[in-house]
Length: 297
Image (cartoon, rainbow, N blue to C red; front, top):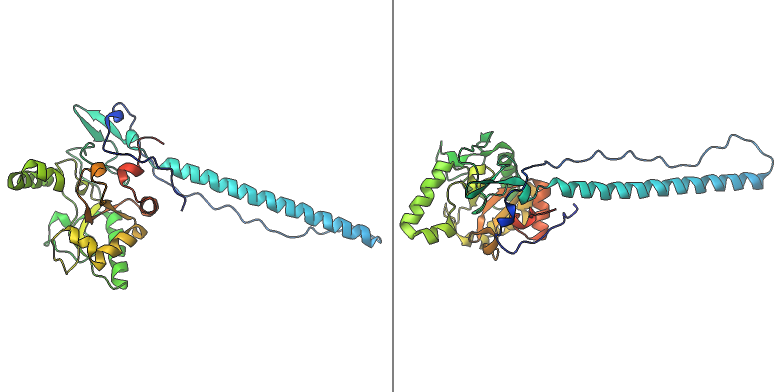
């Protein structure tokens, strides 16, 4: 996996985003090149001069070796070109936002690469397509919408939970999809109970929550019940998630020490689906989505 070029952001500065074009690309894989058959050329000309025959054979092998070297060189160059093309396939944040009054609204809410945060709002009427209930153990009651995820993310979550179980760890889902209206009610409650300043640190305002995308699941483990606390990061299950989630296409969204960039406290329980390729790159770099989907190519 080739590392995409990263430009590290130092904070949530998005004033440069106004007036940027909207766009979104999905990364595609390229067809593998055909294998080149190697071998000596046959010489149908008969000769009584054995020395000359050996010289011709040597020359033929040299030509074949040269041809093979050229093929290998071409393959290496094609791979470099593929890597550059792959790097360009990730959308920048500047390309996926538009001015909407006093706010910035994302233009790719359906993309697995969408970045929503305190500066980048999801449309208030956005509801993800293909919401399904992943077949995993969950604390959410039957029929609760927070059991749901976008199908692609749901299937990946099933594989991640299965992988954890095979390694001896038990994960349980807590909260997935939340509608704009549901997030609005949650934030209002937190603000009433704890004050708006604290509420802004621990929960998102409506339109700014990744849960509305259907690509996120809050997870826990039986030792903690359904509570979502930083302690999850210190449990064997939390450590497994931090180390292996990217193998299934997920990243731990809100990292410790990155609060000034994400705008939220450390949340080891909050995993976000971005696909295996991007997840591997984000994990290897140890960055946030704000830093990975940078402002410019």
